[in-house]
Length: 372
Length: 93
Image 1 (cartoon, rainbow over the protein chains, first blue to last red):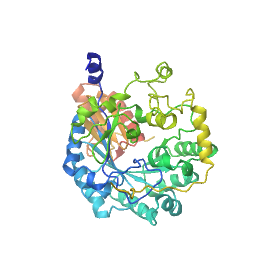
Image 2 (cartoon, rainbow over the protein chains, first blue to last red):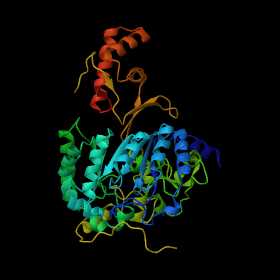
Image 3 (cartoon, rainbow over the protein chains, first blue to last red):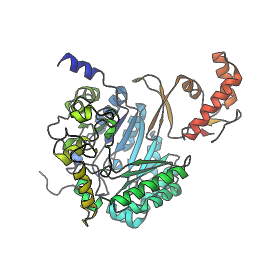
Image 4 (cartoon, rainbow over the protein chains, first blue to last red):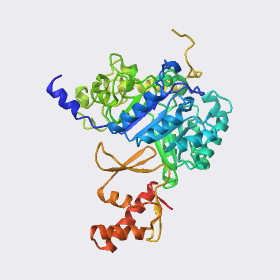
């Protein structure tokens, strides 16, 4: 290793947050799921002790908040022990759940174990829309009941809804639902087209005019409900002029641990060919954060194409999204094609318009039938 | 905007935690999907917020600890607490 590289690596500031994808098992089948199309099976998941070690290492490394996610994290029988592991290490724990399989006694046990916050997903603001998108009859009523139990247990509640063509018209209803259920926060997250959402782009992509109207609706609700409900929005980027600062920069603030223990800079990083991911089964988390080739591949600005390196926004959007560059240009080192300076910019806007006019059915998220 | 009086008692709501951040130095308030890095004055105030003492007692304590004019401390502390209440990371007990 060269001295320069050693210096560069030694300067990595510690991550603030860690997404712990405890399992890919889930009772829902949302067609925009951020999990990879090739899902990990139960037999390949990390065990309780391994996760607890990962939490200790994360706390030592400087992680402050852990997002317990999946799949459905409550599909893990040891979720209480994992929450307790976070609490023992001083980590702030955030449970990201579909809310259809957690009984009241179990919720109380999670609260007693030290759970700090619950983020509940809804797929729509009515049973009809919600249950069709989740492909689970009865899911909406279970979610409503669960939300009330979370508030009753004294835990703070965020409602999260991924937005796309089939529920974009429900934004005002989602705001009302959040208020009715006693949520403190609402996340309106436009679908990001990786993994399952990419497979389903022809069924999910909304038309441009509806996206713009939805943005206005969110802005109006945010202004009206200041001090009452915090509304955070993840914007749809296919119609944008400038790229999003994906993950606030590759390997800058956060890391993902997959169900099998692979440490990733983001959900979709494994789609990028040629990257070497390290596993918590083989190495300590701090070692991986500092030295993993995958994390160092797109850190900072030195990897960027010339046009990005000379751009005044290079440390604002950090070059946008590598996975998106790969998917839409075939090269992860390209400019994020969302950027108006990208030679591919017009092409992806056209692609979004074409997809928004298609009439595809959902391909629901499922484990593949074929097993090797 | 809620302007707390000296007779009010404030506390951190469930889901908000104050802790030292050894990796980066200093103290932080951890809230849902948010991290607030605190300055030295905020740390002195918030480490005295226990959900039992009223603001007057906290101001007395700070005036004594820092040998500073009580009136000014009261104004500064109440402004800071008011700001944190508006951000949903502090509530009236």
